Image (cartoon, rainbow, N blue to C red; front, side):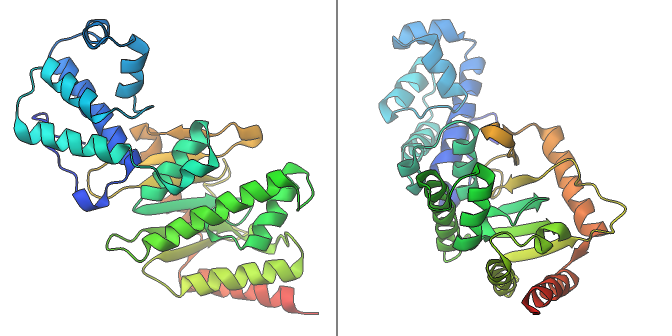
Length: 303
């Protein structure tokens, strides 16, 4: 992510707090190692617990501006540009975002933060329309079925509102200079599964087709039911890619009972990028995918 000299290679206009925190964490750990200091020694000098230093170096918590400067002084870092750059990143990392009000925890909290800063969102869905592409009615019906709850249940409404907030944040970013892009591959069975009823599903498919008109920001693929070379049977996932060299790819796998996984292992993200390419290569994409979506929608409209 950064040169060994500590110089930043991040485009300043594309950074959000999650990426900033991750970069502060990585660079501070690198500087500590270069200074040949152990975590206990540094923690003792800072009057911290080792746990606090470890969490900072893992990017689990943000660090205050004065603490960054104290650490750099302890590591013997005097280069003004390095001090200024890390101070800037620390300041960005402490910026509150819209998702703070949802009080998210665990891997899903990290996923929402990373998704909000991603340049490209690649999603493969075997069971339902991807969350960022759902209508409110579809989201409510899908969430109620997943939770085995009434559609008006408070927990259902909270999850639906989070999904709508994620969408709003994404669409607001489309107005900026570094607009993101969604590439979604959806299994044909998802298109034919009338979650919420035929009318809700028709409106959902109309929504996909409306989004697809913005070809710069939305690209869809469909895996037909008769596809023999199907690489996606292992389950759904979302891959996040970021501007420039600001962060490596992030893989999110949403599992049952809230057992979500957020992974940054290079081999895993490379493998899933290749898997995603397979789904596009062997399925239908572009106009062929949109024709299938229209066909399924028209069939649902038929009496």
